Image: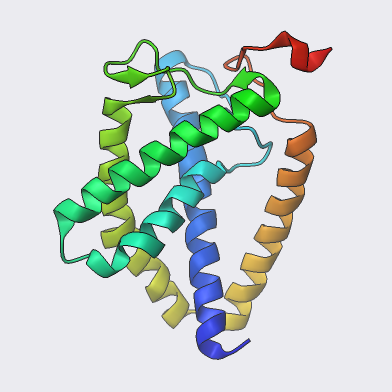
Length: 186
């Protein structure tokens, strides 16, 4: 792998993994602040939520070249993450007959899968990804040994992949999950 190719591989995957972890940490913290419970609310068993990493990756790939237009970054992030969340919710409900989130009690929701307040939060999070997180990741790649970073990324991706495959067959189900279709379990 060429040096630039290695840097991009590290950059993309480090951003993805960091955002998967930040999303997981945010949701665990939010649940704890609301209800005093420590709940791993994602489909996977480890400390990551791939929807956050995927959203950050898409924001970076699709919007980074427009970073001089903050309003565009906000709106693009709003749309990218809202569509991703709706499609992911639909996929999870269809595949597992369960819902990992339900926004029916939130204003301006669509089928309880997305809602305006969280879409606005996604737009703001996109600004953080482009203007804070991506520069930190790029700086880390310039500052630290590439072989060490590459090894860390490969180890984390390997663990993530095993968890992803395992969770495909045995998804994490907490007391927060709403079962929609019992036929999936017969």
